[in-house]
Length: 264
Image 1: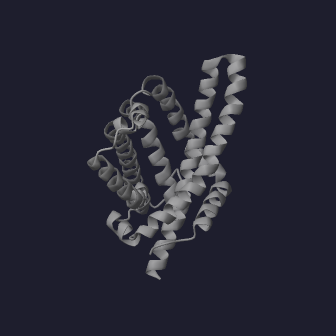
Image 2: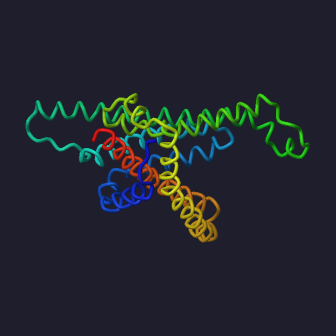
Image 3: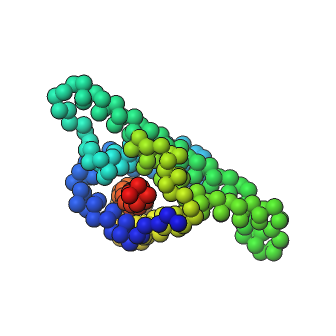
């Protein structure tokens, strides 16, 4: 069973992000600003429809995918953005082509994964929603067998497929997706990856609730409801951006451990 130290991966990610906070702030500035703008439009015009919300967030997904691809290459290969030429034109162009292919591939894969998750959410809402709505629960109607079976199969696939959410990491490194799936074979891999995800995610969820309350209430009282909403949007975009970096860092650590162990 492929496994790695969950606590070590989470700790290493937080440590790496803190040590490189100045570089990551520069890398994340544009994605943060784009995400803030997209969130304002998405929550204003697309919040009642998941598909519309995803469309409004599409520029932010591309920007975040670009950021995470560069972050992956920085963590593994030590490559920083922007590219600093050495003066050897042929060598620099060769390196640039490899880097550009990895960053572009990682960015596109990240967007495709995010869109697939959104579409899966839409499917679950439409297919399972009528059976778990408040009216259905109050009526006590039995859930059809085929619906229950599909939900079990879907949950099993989601557990195994959790590793698919991080395909942008090997892709950003110009590595084969099939090789990645081979190295991370086994159900136990998903359990360890979920553990890292939870440990890296929970502090941001709790922090978001606390900070949003602290920020929104006084600003809303002083400047109005719209100002409080905008302040919460800024905080949400900032927290989500940092969360993406930390979670990706933890997954990078775990994947590198598995790759190194298999090749040793």
